[in-house]
Image (tube, rainbow, N blue to C red; front, side, top):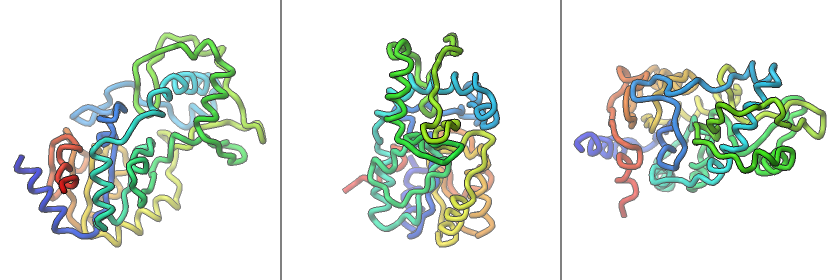
Length: 271
């Protein structure tokens, strides 16, 4: 495609790329995305921070669905889009990779200069004392407390969720923090929750050192990611995007490629 050739030229002409990735980067790894080609929700929006923190029923439903969904999410593997961006970093061309994804697949592919804008799902954090534990350890505890749920199966949903719409969640046993008895939450930024200031500041600093921005697999409908496009515009640097469908920044882009991420970035994997 002509646009793919233009993307290769864009990357060749800029030596310090600020890369921003979204869900479209991981769909080929079997992780569903939230939005359709028009940028609208494909499904009911995910749980909000306030509901999770204030309603026990919401926490039971979240962790029950997540226990089932983690079985596949936790075994997802990087695809060629992740590997291509790792190759970009290894060539010294990536100032930073800022990802909106919580799957850690960029790190699994070998990328080291990564900021997890929305946190990481492979870790659980106590909202009381801050204790952190691996999700695999928490998954084992959930299974031990809820053995009847271990055999359940359901279609995968975004971010390690599963579509258990008709299950009865009231009896699901969710453990509390062993240190303080506090609420345990995945170490990710829920909808309605604020991205930590230090994360935003680090990403902003990296953007100021970049000479171009490359968006990969994001509709940019969530402001936490879109704000960096706004910063890039104010900074006067060009922006290229790879995304199937509309983005919130279409009128701000220097170049847009409507193709699958791994296809558009395939030139980075060539010998």
